[in-house]
Image 1 (cartoon, one colour):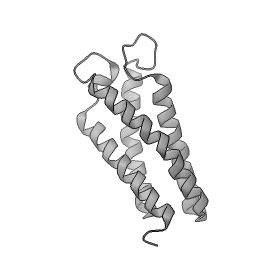
Image 2 (spheres, one colour):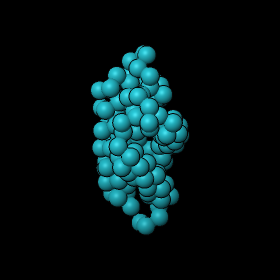
Image 3 (cartoon, helix red, strand yellow):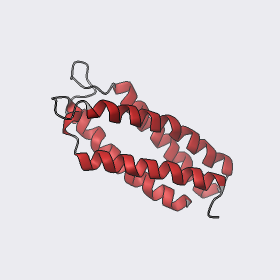
Length: 130
């Protein structure tokens, strides 16, 4: 379960980086870009996700349950930020905002793998499947 969580987390990260680089390439991080995604929200989402991933790798290396729980707790605000950005993205899909060009498959895949990761991390933290 823990290794499956790592795999889904890495797949999620690839989709996230694709969107992040497209958003930044379109100037989304600059004031006046027309983006509905505040830079602070985007970078907090990405940064906390990376922190959680590092914690998860440490958990895999040490098998310390407390670190697994820490990774899960870090994922909660990541998920909340992700849902917030998804809702904002829905309203810009046909506009000229930098995020309006995100491919639907990337956005939906990112969300699906993120949700799967959250569940797998929780299951691994509680010890299901050991």
